[in-house]
Length: 232
Image (cartoon, rainbow, N blue to C red; front, side, top):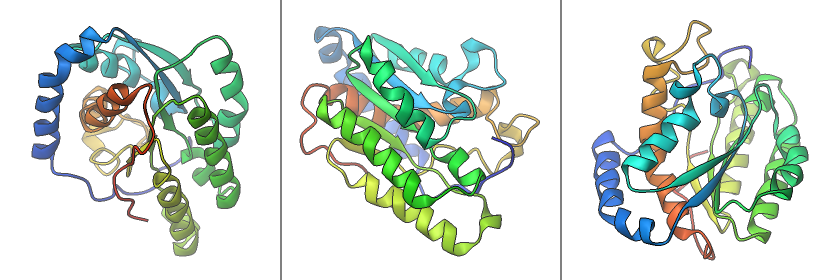
């Protein structure tokens, strides 16, 4: 990633997220009784915790938050800085070759937007990733992205519509924008103005946590699972 790429979209209020986190805590004993989970994180520098010490990065903080909620989770790290949707698609078979994740986070598309790549190709790549995971009955949190505004309104509309279509697929729980509440706040970003700092990662994790616990709870039975309404 080499430049800022957009603004956050509308989200549920933080109080709702806190309420959901409380409900997750109530459900924790059942999760423990069902045993440990493996979570695949397929993404780019945002999911890799770029620029931060490992304990402060996205995956480490998410694992800690899940543990606090009562989940024992092994993270399968499939996040590569600079990756595009095509790169993630190419690596997925290899990642799945030696592991059987129970659920997945797919956080890709930011670099497609930064480079002004074909929206249709991005959508096809992400659809192929979701198809592969669905065939293995792996429920997914799909993290939405925004392209840089300098690419114009038509590109932005097509980009967001692509994520909106993907969000309606069975087995997918949709997060409208991975960096909502962070991207427009310099105090939550590193000096590059792109990647969350330690405080920003806490916001990202708090927002996605209820969605991740949902797909972990649905692991092994994702038929009919739907995401939040898209807002392209």
